[in-house]
Image (cartoon, rainbow, N blue to C red; front, side, top):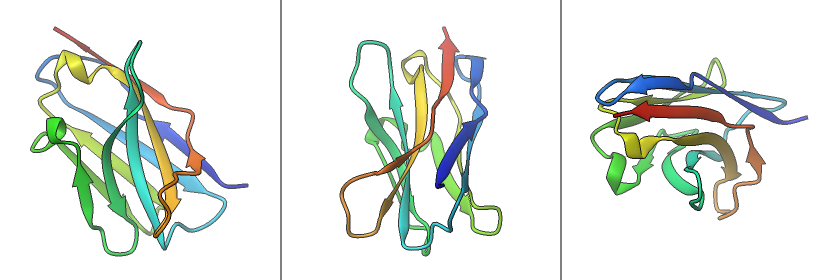
Length: 119
């Protein structure tokens, strides 16, 4: 069974940092794109950052560029999201997800981890 499990969420003051981690199990994620998404209360889920498993090519939404960094560890089968200079508007549940290269659909999702940034 393929699983993604997030960890690392919590409460932090504005300007602080958190590091989220996503552990994959059940298969390797080569030929996959790994993504971090978030959903704030009352809002749609939105893409935050993505990385190709094999080549490490990254992409970010504009509002997190320069503050967030996505990375992967092939040996550990993990994908991390380092979040710096956090703002209250970053408050959300953060989800890790996977899709196959060439597909537009993320079809494996974690359960989410909550991030709260206080002003």
